[in-house]
Amino acid sequence: MAEKTIREPARELPVAGDYDLCVLGGSCTGVFAAIRAARLGLSVALVERMGSFGGVATLSLVNIWHSDLDEAFEKRIFAGLSLEMVERLRRRDAVQDSLRSGAARWIFNSAEMQIELDEVVTEAGIDPWLHTAFCAPWVEDGRLAAVIVENKSGRCALRARFFIDATGDGDLCHRLGLAGRVAAHFQPGTACALVSGWESVGQAPWREIVARQADAHRMPKGFIWSAPVPGTDLRMLAGTRVGEDCSDARGLTRAEIEGRRQIRAIQDILREHVPGSRVGLAGLPARIGIRETRHIDCLHRLSGEEVLHGKRFDDAIANGSYRVDIHHRDKPGITFRYLDGRETYTRHDQPPVEGRWRAAQAVDPTYYQIPYRCLIPQGPYGNLLAAGRFIDADEQAHAAIRVMVNMNQTGEAAGVAAALALRGGVAAAAVDPRQLRATLREGGSVIL
Ligand SMILES: Cc1cc2nc3c(=O)[nH]c(=O)nc-3n(C[C@H](O)[C@H](O)[C@H](O)COP(=O)(O)OP(=O)(O)OC[C@H]3O[C@@H](n4cnc5c(N)ncnc54)[C@H](O)[C@@H]3O)c2cc1C
Image 1 (tube, rainbow, N blue to C red):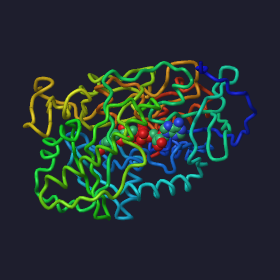
Image 2 (image 1 turned 90 degrees about the horizontal axis):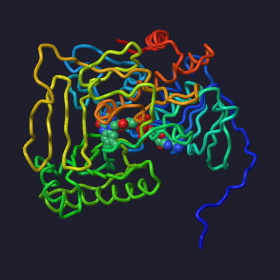
Image 3 (image 1 turned 90 degrees about the vertical axis):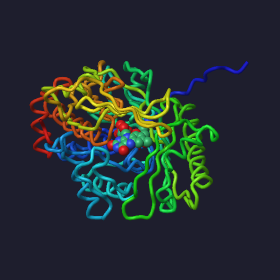
Image 4 (image 1 turned 45 degrees about the horizontal axis):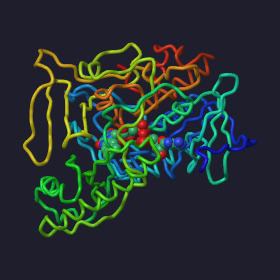
């Protein structure tokens, strides 16, 4: 009978670098963490397993950032590196603005964003490691001392005094054995595509057509939307729905294959059922877009109640106004919940259902906050922070905070907190939130 395990022999590994900070995961979350830390004088390594930075914004083609204004479109709630990036993209004609839109404040060109991220990483003097996957933590005398990574050159270790896990799935925290969970109703993934010939769809009710034909093509009745790609004739199309656990190797593999199958199915439906349609497949994502996998237990779990009631926190490091946005895995369509109490359930094959999740009240909150404590993993490692979609939030809170402009702020906060922890010789949990908020503000963040 075949043995169920094999024992990998112990071996000496070269230490390929020694840094103040090592950031794992190179989406804007990780890049912005690295930049904020580098601007405060830290030597920083940035490790990304794919060939470019940007995460979902580039590799998965998702090209919309949400509003920097509160839900009333009156007060600015964030700035920082998100706005710096928008200004850089604007110089390339690679971004479209829409000031008073809760759906899409900025639509950008993901390819231009990829190159822009290379430039900001280089300008900040960060040591980039592309095509380099985090494999395992290295703990010495109870302290996280290095990470083991694997790339074309083989395996090596990167030493650092502090670590930020920005891998989306919390790979470092998970492999350290820290407590966490995959949400019971985690949101499904979506493989997006770039299509040409979109003008040929014209005014046809294409969403309804795709929904009506879904069963015949073994497609879940999800939610389908599209956006222009500034500077091109292409369109980004997001309409697939894949309910696999993408923090599991087999699940991720099935998700990639099923996502691409569904892209083809949508293309076939449009060609066959929209008269005159000549939609062509111009590009696939480097990785399926993943909305949710693990969450790590941190010093605070942000709740949907706290988000929807706009609770204020003394240690708030991020502000958001994007609605609770639930892509259902177990039924068609999506649910939106707004801070003003409205709720909408939308599916393309039926009229939307408008209602309220709470009664009307005299004054509504117009934005919510993310406290620093949601970034501090429980456990013995004081030189570790979480940033990005796996921070501690319940399913409803996650459904709002998961959007990129919010995750970008968690990255910036983690980078600044790492610098303050190292400067003060203290653990992440002992960083003074007043100092953290003041330093974030000095660096360009909006702190409310
Ligand atoms: C289809 C879809 C549509 C969405 N629409 C929007 C939208 O319109 N607007 C919006 O703002 N948000 C949207 N979101 C949500 C948003 O994109 C994500 O929640 C957000 O990007 C998560 O950011 P992150 O940095 O945590 O993770 P990611 O963007 O997934 O980045 C994680 C990075 O870590 C890297 N990585 C992972 N594991 C390792 C490892 N072991 N070693 C090294 N590197 C590793 C990955 O390659 C990746 O670059 C959407 C999400 C999806 C899936």
